[in-house]
Length: 222
Image 1 (cartoon, rainbow, N blue to C red):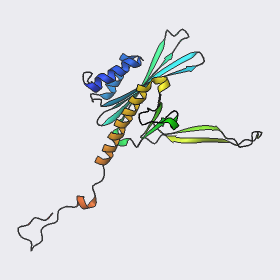
Image 2: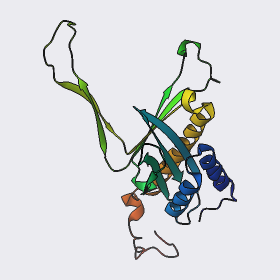
Image 3: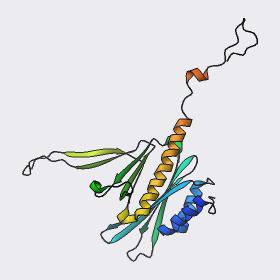
Image 4: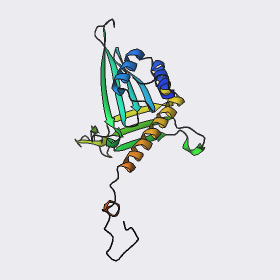
């Protein structure tokens, strides 16, 4: 059970309450996924998508502990037109910090010609990779001739990512962008520290001590 009395625990619980997306259910799922580990940093991202006459919501929760990153995803689905029957789908994943290979941050600043050091970014995209999964975005290819009707095939981009979250001031508020940046910094620091701790010991440091020479007395050789 993660401590809801500690500062990180209180902040995480408050963030789930503010998101307002089945907060008790999501909190219990997060608690079960943490399995007693104490949260050090977190990011809660609620998104809403509208498709024709249907509204779909889902929440993604990232929780960083000293050893792992926990990813919880919950979305809902209406089973009838009136919306009386709703189903929640839940998925969780626990990733050891040492497996995280990439933490990529992308920022958007408005009116960069007037930029000042105190200005906050209006949008942030966080991409985290660990399993080598890749996403392909394809679109029809074209040419410079606007009258050309030839088939130029497709063009696209190949991006490696396991988690991709976009936070914008317009949709989520400036504080949400800063919260996402704070989580990314904590995750980046954790992955960097883990990488340093797991570096191989140089050969010169791993050699066994040599025995003292036969003519050396009163000295210890390493």
